[in-house]
Structure formats: C-alpha cells, structure tokens
Length: 104
Image 1: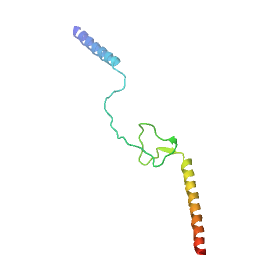
Image 2 (image 1 turned 90 degrees about the vertical axis):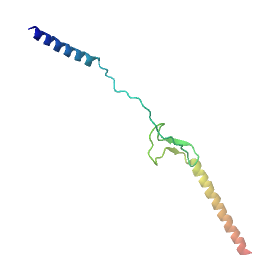
Image 3 (image 1 turned 30 degrees about the vertical axis):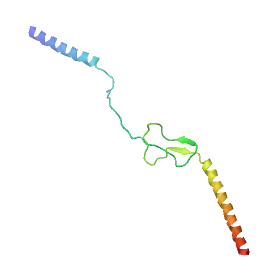
Image 4 (image 1 turned 90 degrees about the horizontal axis):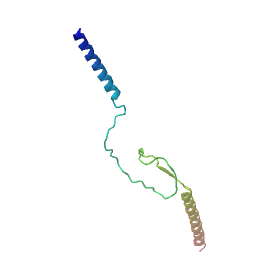
C-alpha cells in the first residue's frame, strides 16, 4: 500500500507541476530583434509643378515604374499654349517675309 501511495503522490506532483508551468507560461507572441536594410533612392521630377496627390507613404515599397505623385499640369499646359502661339506668330512672320521676297 505505501508503494501505491508513493506512486500516486509522484503522479499528482508531476501533474500539478506541469499544470503550474503551463499556467505560468508567457502568452505573449514571440519577439525577435534584428536589423532591416533597404535601398535609399533619390526621387526627382523631370518638370517642376505643384504636387496634387502622393500615391505612396514614407517607407512604403514602390514597384518599378509606378507613378509616385501626380503634378498639377495647368502651368505646363499654359507654357505649352504660349509656345504654340509663339510658333504661330513666327510662321506668320515667315510667310509675310516670303511674300516680301516674292514682290522684290
């Protein structure tokens, strides 16, 4: 009988100890430390202008060839229209001078 009692006490002690260790276990997610390395790129615009929208935030991964920002094209359109008008004036001036050469 004492032998059965000793075995029962040992079994109860093992079950109790394992239950205590499970209860005491840390339930937080695993935590790892390390260093993340990335490439830093300089981004520049081919033209100047006012930025309307920005498609990506700081630190976001940007796929190759993606448009990062949208510029306001009103200034560029106005300059293009001015240059087109200037070309039209020069074409008219060339036509006028060709007429003068033909008269002479």
